[in-house]
Image (cartoon, rainbow, N blue to C red; front, side):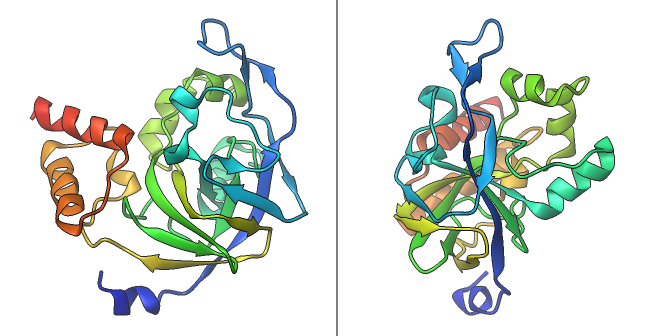
Amino acid sequence: MNQAMVDVLPPGRVSAVSVVHELLPAPWGSSAKSTAIDKRPVTRPVEIGPLGLAGDTQVDRKHHGGQGKAVYAYADEDADWWGAELGRPIAPGLFGENLRLAGIDVTGAEIGERWAIGPQVVVEVTMPRTPCRTFAERMQEKGWVRRFTRVNRPGAYLKVLQSGQVRAGDEVRVTFRPGHGVTVGDFLPGADAATMRRLIDAFAALGLELDPDIRHIAEKAIRRG
């Protein structure tokens, strides 16, 4: 997609901003002692920086944090789908997301796509969320990890390129799309070698830096052939 096409995409909006409500004990066998998955929405403006939202916590930065996973975004439309599927509302923050977005195709976002949020913040889509034991324990749904993976509505992790404040109601605009066509939804349940090679080559051609975690996944898929 060229820049002219990006410029005419209708904007979305932030429907909720959520930060950690309280730390909960991590599931048995976890490498961390606690989890910050219990997110709840707030109405005040929240500062977003390189390691996420002020008032939030990244307990296990090896698996669920760091700059490449500073913010987790989930789409209202996907949450509504899950609500109908599970027969219960998926409130903002239930999936551990920081941002609930309306009108933005999160699963269809290209890796490396950039969004402007409100008047200050710029983020980059780095990778999909991979479901884990902590997520399964929170949801209390049979076979949740496999089910979430199969449905392939993973939400996206974001890297913060420009810090600032965000709040519910802020406009979200796609400002850049790399054009390689490899999306968040291309990774679950499995990435194929040709698609991953296209992703790596596209980032190299554009002079962009692919997040190390997603590069590892891509290179592993290429080795598998």
